[in-house]
Length: 208
Ligand SMILES: Cc1cc2nc3c(=O)[nH]c(=O)nc-3n(C[C@H](O)[C@H](O)[C@H](O)COP(=O)(O)O)c2cc1C
Image (cartoon, rainbow, N blue to C red):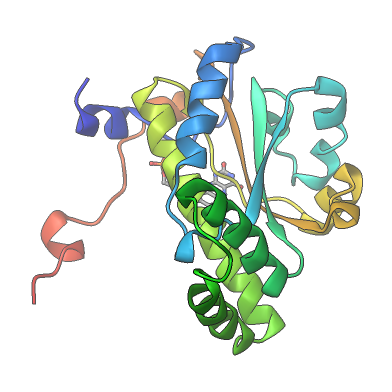
């Protein structure tokens, strides 16, 4: 399949079958997601994989009736850091120093620059910024899954606070951003036959 074939094949699945994504496929998909770009490379989120049916069933009451959070192969959840700030940068600088074999003093200007860029944002803007980074990873997950012929459904139709509570995320310094059940489409999912509703190329792509 070409890239465009894969992207046309992908749709937001309404009903999944009970077929499981293999461990190896899941690992590859998560690895592709881990490689996502992010602002300054700061990756202010975790990618949480929930396979346990028992745990996922507890999320159904907080999913506005969308049972696919449990009735799919796995639920992938993007959770942003509750507090974005100097610690977000320090963690990244530690890794950067290690990967590029540099000292912290060599990276101090870079570190200060990132810290000042974040410091001028309000707490709400920092959260918004972190959500934006999580959404880039979500987009990458969707495309990578499509190329791998794994189905998915990006979802914001759920109660964030309910999820955080059930999964104990606040205690971990995290807050749910966006979720995505993955698996394989059910043969009864008529949505698969629906044509894509997209604005025409010349309507959405502007050349200036
Ligand atoms: C951020 C985001 C949140 C979404 N939330 C839901 C959701 O809660 N439930 C659902 O069934 N689809 C959800 N969708 C899927 C969209 O409705 C779907 O992507 C859009 O209608 C385009 O259709 P397609 O993805 O099938 O091509 C969401 C999509 C995005 C990007």
